[in-house]
Structures are given as structure tokens and as C-alpha cells.
Image (cartoon, rainbow, N blue to C red; front, side):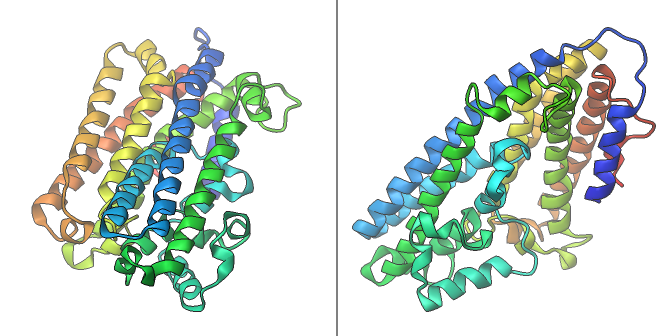
Amino acid sequence: MRAVSALLFGALLLSPAPARAEADQAAIAEAALTKVIRPGYAELTKATAALDKDVRSLCGQPSAAALEKTKESFAEAVAVWSRVEILRFGPILQDRRYERIFYWPDPKGIGLRQVQSALRIQDQSVTQAETLRDKSVAVQGLPALEYLLYGEDAETLASADGAFRCSFAAGIAANMQNIAQDTAEGWREGAAYAKAFLGPVPADPLYHTPKEVTLELFKAFTGGIELVRDQKIAKTLGASPEEARPRLAPLWRSGLSFRNMAGNIAGVRTLFAEGGLAALVAGESPGVEQSVEFDLDRAVEVLGGIDVPMQEAATNAELRGKLEALRVALKSASQTAGDMIARAAGLSFGFNAMDGD
């Protein structure tokens, strides 16, 4: 599927567009960088720093209260990460940072087995960020930390019995803070990626034209919706309650699956409204951008309002119906906005890119 998608998006750049006033693609890049990308990673740096501090405090003075505070910081880090999770380009892809923060999906449970193995043999290399970064991506990020905080024997973190487990958690938290800082640094003013993003030239290995930058944002918008609609909802719900696979959902142990999805759509909404894409839609058909924003806001509201674990939601007829209706609304928003963004930016194509492949 990724290979076909890559060919499709390449074709978008080569397909002739109808004559029209040129979109200000440099302004789109500037808006996306200054209003979405940099603030998003700044927030992630802040959230991971708070999580790192709380995990270290838990390890220093373990207690039920300290464990609860750490879980709250973990939930906040998940919420912040979820809003930038859709931005699968730039410095976050360097050194496998994306996978090191969020190794998902993991349908075969590879990550779980590796985390459990490290716990069983008390592998000291996972307790320090400097050595953890060279380990498997599956033991470095949020899913691994979730198991330590919510998985089997997680209650030992509230006492001295969980000393090694807590050291492992501290290694992960420090590692994620380093990743967040390095990613934010990669987007700073004057950094190579930021310069290429704002001023692409043919000889640059990252972006050759402004249209390629707009295409990157287009893919983040449509891909972010697809991530939630097809990957996180459809594959988890299955065709019926009997075929539901709730453990395929991200972060199901902590009950943060729906918060993660709501954050993804909130990130899409911010990219659309603040990153210059809504202006493209408004230029094609004034007022449609407001309809798209309404649909995205409604999706965030629905997902954020589900207060039961995925295991229960996947077999609840009322919630399944609500989630299926949400999938339809998200597809409509993606198609409507996607088509207009592509036309306005000259990313024309002969069939609907959001229909799948």
C-alpha cells in the first residue's frame, strides 16, 4: 500500500493542473512551521520533561501517590504526542525517532515480549537513556512505558519491590525527552530541515519545490484522518463485535486509546485551520472550510467523550454505531477538503486519492 501511495503522490506533482491563480505555498509552509510544527514539538518537549521528572521522583520515593502522579504525566505526554503523531516527516524520522517514541502497531506482540524479557533478566542497559537508545525501538517509547505503568506487576512501582522496573521506566522517560528535544532542535530557525522546508531549491535533497512542501502537509492531513479512521478504529472494531480485536488499539492497557485518537484528529484540525490548508479550501469554495472544521471538531468531541476502555467499546452496539458514523464523517471531510486542497495547490490527479488503493 505504501509503495502505491508513494507512486500516487509522486504522480500528483507531475500531473498538469488547470490554469488558476497560484497558491501562496511559501505562506503555507511558514504558517505550518510557525503555528503548528514548532509549537507542537515544543509542547512535546515540555510534556516529556515533566514525565521524566515524575518518573525519577517515583523511583526516588516510591508510593501510591507518586505512581498516580506519574500516570497523570504519562497521560499528558500521550495527549501531546498524539497531536504531532500525524506529522510523519522531518527530524522526527531521523534516527528512527518516530518508532522509538511510538512503536505501534505491534500485532504480533514483539514489543511486549522484549519489554518482559528485559524485566525478567533485569537488563541494566535499559535503565539509562544513553544505552537504551541503541536497543530495539520496541522498548524505548510510550507503549513500553505504558506496560511498565499498567501491565502485570505494575503495582510494585509503588514500593521498593519495583526498583528495577522503575529504573527501566526512568530510562524510557529520559530517552523520550532527549528525542523530543532533538526533534524540536531540528526544526529551529536556521536548522537544515527548517531552511529546506521554508525555502526549497532544486539542488536540496529534502525538498526541491514549494509544491513538495505543500504535498507533505497534504499527506499529513489526509493520512492523519486515515490513521484514525482505518487503522485505529476499523481494524480494532472488525466487521462485528465477535470479530473485534480491541488489543490492536494503541494504549489499550491504560485506557488512553480514545484520547490518542482524539489527539490525532485535533492535530489534523490544527494543521488544517492554522497551517494554511483551510485558506486553500476557502479559496475554492468559501464556507466549506468551516464545514470541514465542524466535522473534525465533532470527531474530537465524540472520541474524547468515550470514557470506557476499548475492550468494552468494541463490543458495545451503541458505541460501535457511533464510531462507524464517525468514520463516515471523517471520510467525507477528508475527501472534500483533500480534493479542494489538491486543486488549489495544483496537486491534480485523475482519481480520488482518498478512496484507498
